[in-house]
Amino acid sequence: MSEPGVRAAILAGGLGTRLGGAKATAELAGRTLISYPIEAARGAGLPPMVIAKRGSDLPALDCELVVEPDEPVHPLLGVITALETWGGPVIVLGCDMPFVTAPLLGWLSGHEAPTVAAVLGRVEPLLAIYAKADAPSLRASLEEEASLRHAVERLGPSRVGEGELSRFGDPGTLVRSVNTEEDLAEAEGLLSG
Image (cartoon, rainbow, N blue to C red; front, top):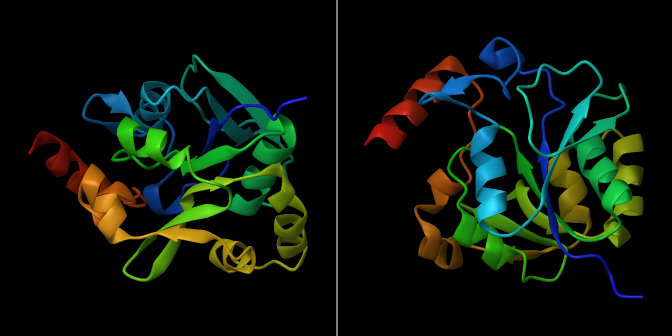
């Protein structure tokens, strides 16, 4: 039996406290923040699924919603939930990443998992492809309360650096997430410019 194809998992289970509430429903240029990575995934031919906690504040979704356990509140749980739900490779994105592009995601989907973007020498775990085989190591890291970056580093992933990412835009912008009101204003300026 062949392995399932690649899907995109958009993590939306965080609290969004620095942004003052749910990131997924924050408005950016007349759209919800989560609509950007969902659209990029679709444009790359990757069926999107949103991973969130029960009761997460989400806009109306036109894709699969996967409910992760209520505890712990940690992005690793979203990655593990996506891998265990789908069973095949997943490209993981944050719901707060409005600058990822369909061409970038399509290109990344052709890489062997685990492969992670790296910008300024730092891995970006929420622009990466993982396989179900990575789940046990990630779960062990979750039980140890390791950071997401540390957990991903333990996988020994391949890295795609700025030279490769620059084909799809400015690497720093591609991996940029919106965490605060200031970030939201800056993103608005980038999108309008």
